[in-house]
Amino acid sequence: MITIGVDDTDSEKGLCTTYLAAVMMERLERIGEIKGLPSLVRLNPCVQFKTRGNAAIAFSLDTDRLEETKEVALKTLMELSDFSGPKTNPGLVVAEEVPAELSCFYRRALDEVLDVSEAEEIIDKYGLWSRGFKNRRGLIGALAAMGAEFPDKTFELLAYREPKRWGTPREIDEESVWRADELTYPGTWDTVDHHNRKVVFAPHSKDPVLFGIRGEDPKFLISSLETIRSEPFERMVIYKTNQGTDVHINRSVIPEVVENRSYRLRGVVKKEPEAIEGGHLFFPLQSEDGKSSIKCAAFEPTKNFRDLVRDLVPGDLIEVYGAVKKMTLNIEKMEVVRLAERTALEAPICPSCKRRMKSAGRDQGYRCRRCKTIAEGKVTAVVPREIDTGFYEVPPCARRHLSKPLIRMRDRKIHPSR
Image 1 (cartoon, rainbow, N blue to C red):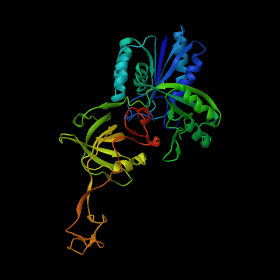
Image 2 (tube, helix red, strand yellow; image 1 turned 90 degrees about the horizontal axis):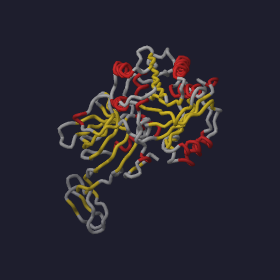
Image 3 (tube, one colour; image 1 turned 90 degrees about the vertical axis):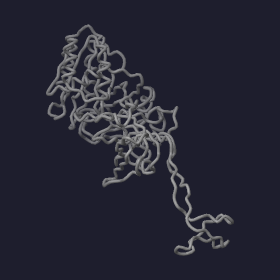
Image 4 (cartoon, rainbow, N blue to C red; image 1 turned 180 degrees about the vertical axis):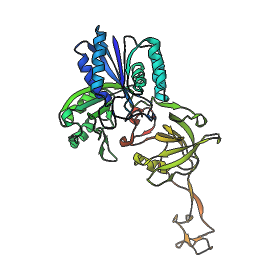
């Protein structure tokens, strides 16, 4: 059994590592058998070197033709990598046995920004066959994908465009996409965004992907595919993946936060959220002991999620999930654990007729015009909150690949985005 890992072959201008892997698997099937589903492995979303979604691919091949396997894999990589991309640094690894150490390496690649020298040390230590190009950072993802373990997993069906159509507008019947979503949700998710009335499962870039359907089980993906009408696709592959699992999230405390990692942090809202130009919202989250704080953000692309953030008030106890960059946590989801009481000064209620009293004039208190009842001044009243306890999430148009949708958390009090 041979395991192959590949990463970092696409660029901002086009091509796609998952497409390269799909073609590579087809070519290798002439000399062996692909065993199981290939793995689509998302790594640390904070890595600044990524081109798009920071995905690497690994798959297993049952064959006794090792040298020919290396030759086909390398030839495919050379043919379908965009070496002109400034962030394109392909890496390819072929192993007859996957070292157990790669499981830990995968876990670190989810959390940290690793150096390519660490990947090269592992390759040298175990005598793995590899090829790295340019700065060779793709070797990191290739090894991490080979070592990936999925205690929780989802699936994604990727349909790829005919090469003659690359770079042209995608032809997808939107009505059929909405119908497919209606038939398969919640077995599939993030195909459409109901609140923002958008189809979100198809990219807008020039890469070979026509669309991707994410879900809990391959049977739901196939059902959705059979409903969608679109331009003909060249090929289709179903991947098992760590997408939608929150595997990148580390439970921690505010004083221990490190840049470029993703966390789940509990704290108390210190000040009401404030908006800046562009529609971005920010507020400080303070540790429960009051000794530390971190800035939290709901950026404009999170759309209607910002309405929920606006309703937070000082004293609310919440847990936020998201990536930390420039020591600001970009919220992917949040749990409202306990709501603070929100009060306001209001005109008093007449004790006789229960109607709101009116001002009797400046510094003259309040009077009920009907009952002639008087009161000295305003009273403190509890203001109803628009938000409730439970989990809230950003809409599908803003969701990160690794972030777990609330429909996968049915054992909790959730308020899904639809």
